Length: 312
Image (cartoon, rainbow, N blue to C red; front, side, top):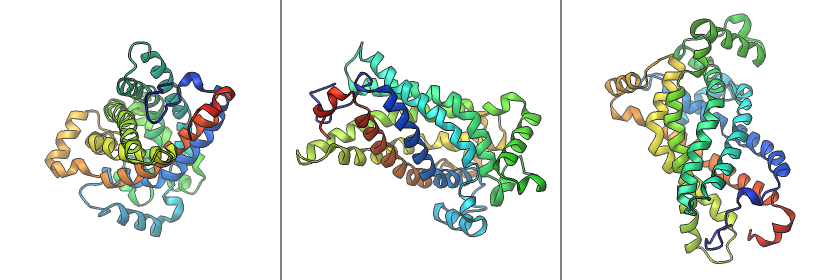
């Protein structure tokens, strides 16, 4: 534990691992359910040509709600819940790498940067196949003409398991097993920098806020404010590659560079900002829920002998 910091960081060795993983599953599920509609909207905005279907985030929200109902905002959600596995892998990798790097450097920025990037590498290796399937399901309904695969009429009325099997079968028939890792490189180029940037900025903003806040201000409030600031910063930096990633995965492209060039040619530099507002809107509650949940999770998972030694 770094006592010299205004906000103490609960490290891996301070945790009761059984509590940590038990509470972590519920926390991750709550976050997914909260922000999924914004994720769906962001994906549709990024894939559409120009403003052919939606003029913006709020227009997309109300159109989907009006034509597809609340269920339309949760297309592919049940498949996406399998990312709970990658969520736990992410948390574990982040904490273990922080512990490993601390043997060589006590600089928190270095530890956060390396651990965040490493955690994203592991998580994306698990997440990409799930994303490929869930994104195809997201694009059904009003956005069905934006994707290569469509649910047949018999499958369309079935519950999500039937729809999921249908989409998986189509992807495998057209692209084989590699089709489930389409956009993997683009995902790594998006999420490794995003994760590597988020954690250092999160701790940086928390530190700066702690210097301005009263000494008796709860740390959790400062951390809840730092999370969205870090998320907005990371989202802005990595959004261009996120647009490319979405198009590669949904449209079945094979080249990240060619996709990037075509996007610039057709829509100019503004095309690189597509879905940014939806991404920031989704990342804000995500960051708040994640930070509050994650810091609470770590506090609840502290080893009994350390509970009274941590300011809350």
